[in-house]
Image (cartoon, rainbow, N blue to C red; front, side, top):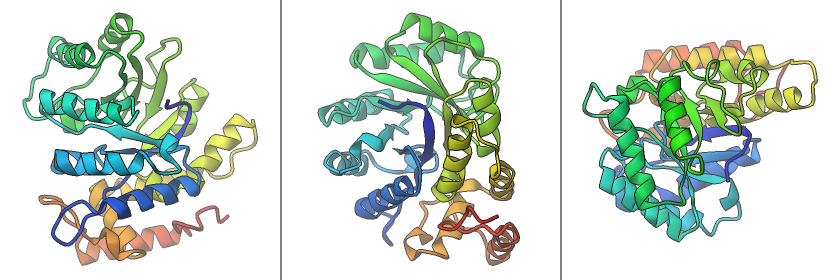
Length: 294
């Protein structure tokens, strides 16, 4: 079960034919855990979840179920279809995955609190033992959870709605529920969130900042002086200057050619943007595997 900590929305690695490279995707996730993450979530936004087929997702689920780090692996769904969401969850349950990060359907605009409530209610009716991390990301889903909407879901389904990833940043300061996991979606809110009683973060950029983010988290837990938070925020600011997925894959492709492919309509940064990104990170003395430099 997911607990307090630092998690990535892990990247999906693609073959040249744009199919999911399951083994490489798992290997990258494992490397980030070995670099400090408490765990990773497959098929979040960073994992191009809306663009990857159900069959490929199932292939990955079957493989991670026997991995030595499987207790550190968690799943998103990334489906607009309610029935496909339920189908994927049930498949995960066959392999004893019970915690899921689930965003409301993201195509039709003007979603209401009632409609979103009905979406989660239906999932829970079909899979009563599921544990759900709500995914609050208005930019992609077109819906912003309110404190009232989350509170209603938690009070109605106290055994199922266990937390929230707050990428919209309107809940992490204001939502106060007992025994509820709150994960801001950006490193910029990690320390502030911890000071407010949050649980950690679930972030795209933790694909490259694992040791740095873990250092900030551990120093908070140990009540030690913070020495790396400013650098962590500065690195996040650099990536926030671009499309996050494009910037991540562009940067990581300079270290590992596996990351050069994206599913359309996503594209890598152009050569000027890529050079600019790398120069900014170099100015911060940032390296994926050496990012605790003073």
